[in-house]
Amino acid sequence: MTVTQLVDYADAVRRFDPVLGIEVHVELGTRTKMFCPAEVEFGGDPNTQTTPVSLGLPGALPVVNGTAVEYAIRIGLALNCQIAESCRFARKNYFYPDVPKNFQTSQYDEPIAFDGWLDVELEDGTVHRVEIERAHMEEDAGKNTHVGGAAGRIHGADYSLVDYNRAGIPLVEIVTKPITGVGDRAPEVARAYVQALRDIFRALDVSEARMERGNVRADVNLSLRATPDAPLGTRTETKNVNSFRSVERAVRYEVSRQAAILDAGDTVVQETRHWHEDTGITTSGRVKSDAEDYRYFPEPDLVPVEPSREWVEEIRAGLPELPQAHRRRLQDEWGYADAEMRDVVNAGALDLIEATVAAGSSPAAARKWWMGELARRAKQDEVELADLAITPAQIGELQGLVDSGRINDKIARQVLDGVLAGEGDPEQVVGARGLEIVSDDGALLSAIDEALAAQPDVVEKVRGGNQGPVGAIIGAVMKTTKGQADAKRVRELILERIGS
Image 1 (cartoon, helix red, strand yellow):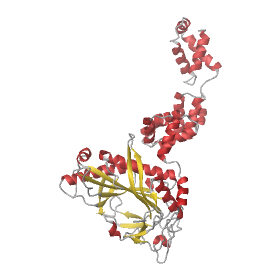
Image 2 (cartoon, helix red, strand yellow; image 1 turned 30 degrees about the horizontal axis):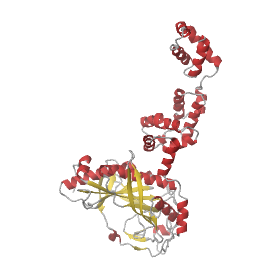
Image 3 (tube, one colour; image 1 turned 90 degrees about the vertical axis):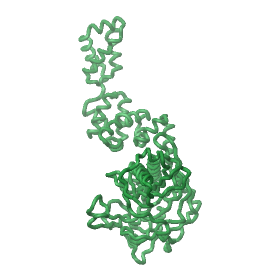
Image 4 (spheres, one colour; image 1 turned 90 degrees about the horizontal axis):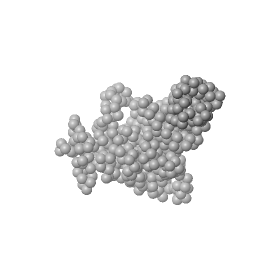
């Protein structure tokens, strides 16, 4: 069925219960491929990072990458999974040009990790537990490029090119159990879950986890049912969604689309679908295959993988602090309120503030800069905070100049302008622009005497015991010094001069 009129999302989730299932593929950051010594490097010339094994040439035999196995175990442990004492690879048989062997070496009924969970925190602090079915090892396929036609799709293309550099790169695929009870927050949960995984991959140092490069890709399964007690509905699988925002948008779209189909009395087709970032819709790919369609059978050229319990515990002991624990510790150390910490995390400022504190700034000052002035400028320029042309070290240096009294907050914003304009580090900008606060009493007294002579009536009021008008003299001095005087010291000198 072709849907031309979507159901409003709020109406759809009021009348139907959405159920999610998410499969996340992460490319492991190993030096070589999963089953051969071909180098792994992003951006190489097409078909230059191949071996007879990755090309599936006759007689070529695979050898398992031990580092990839270790990385898979790290991921499994971080997701609270059980690690199999013995697991093995299988052949997943299907023909597609980017799979040179005509089968993918994967794991089927014997994954390396299984039965785990991950607590996912939403932007308002709500926590939803996602149950993990399995995390298994496999190899990536190559990359097809369709030339001509619309939007790079195979339909209508003049011809296609295949690059096998990616074929054989180690992957771990993480498959959830059905994610229920999410209601109208299904898009948020999906996004937060994928983002939490990305953060874990980076913390574990098992992948660069750059979604724009395809290091992390999500297949989003969604179905609707009449009530939370009803059997699961027919699901669709939106393939290879590679940004957090797109994950959220794809879920919303599929909820509205499937609701429209059900309202029309039609049946949702179990199929894979393609996400279109430009239009924000999904389109049909192919009827979804079931496991038996792939004719899985054990890989005859590889022996079972049997990680010893000692090795698994050694890996567990070496795991770094994971993102949620890391955030909790920093919040305690910095003294941020729950809402403040959530704002920092949601703004993508956590790492920036942590690095700024490491550069010598107080947590309060670091938060003030990144969540205040810099957040405003990032929004104004329509860029991410991390993409601003300033580093945490430079913010730490800027705050150090304020703390030492060499500049004040007002001048600091001028210094910030200079740094963002590429004029150098804060110290260099202060020197080049002559922004350092005037602290020499002689220079200040000269400006004070000039201001006192110009406002004799104010002087008389102050001598009479009314110190309110002192502000007018301070203002005149600040104007003369272009705002570069220490206002507190100016006040002290004025009162000494007047004799009050």
